[in-house]
Amino acid sequence: MAGGVAVTYVDDNTLAAIDQRIRLAQRKTSANGTMVTRDTTGPGCTVLHDGATIATPAKCLGSVFANAGDRVVLDLYGSEWLVTGSFSSLAFGEGSRALDGLPSAATPITSATFVDLTEFGSFSFSKAYDNTFVRVGLTASCFSSVATTRVFWGVRLVQTAGVSPYGPTDLTMGGFMLNTVNIHTSFTKFKRYLGLADGGIPAGTYTVSLRWRRFSGTGTLSADTNDDFALELDERVRALAPIL
Image (cartoon, rainbow, N blue to C red; front, side, top):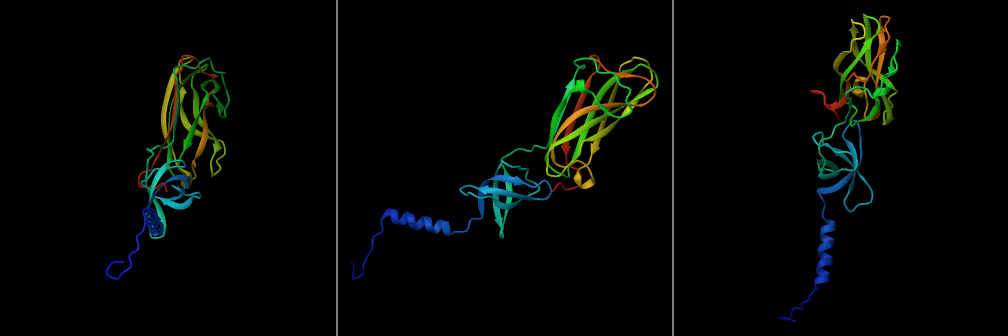
């Protein structure tokens, strides 16, 4: 007792327990976590905050690129958690395949409807957002047994995963006239295919293959080890059109 006043001494463990209770009682306005789900349309997502066991609903700012599994930072605005940063890098969908000559001669065709150029093979393409567009670039070549025969090329998308269903679709790339018999002729084209909001391609994963058909004329279309091919798909953001 000092000067008639009782003094109580608190040990370090008790002080630490008091400090912890004060910290836990404070309202957090920022956090780190891992994104669990990400809506393909709109800003909605869920994030598992560090130290938590249940994912919390949140919204992802349009300037932040983040997908399920990415580490993110969050800030609390009012009663709503917003994802304001991500440790991932920008990664829209892309896929490509190129052949300097087919591995073997293609089966000649006279089909008026699209059929696979099976010798070209296939590859996978994943689209991150519903409302982005897909830029398709194609270079292909072939030859005809009869002059003035026209060939058309197409790109086949078969969805293997995705929230919004998308049936197998042939994206027509156009074609050209083969004016000379048995002369290898090359074709190059770039086209844009819009996203789900415009009736186009939704987010998802796709198997991509190359297709061809005889559009007009009477010739048999052929391609072989002397014909070069390149096909690429790139997901892009439309100018002045939000993706969220």
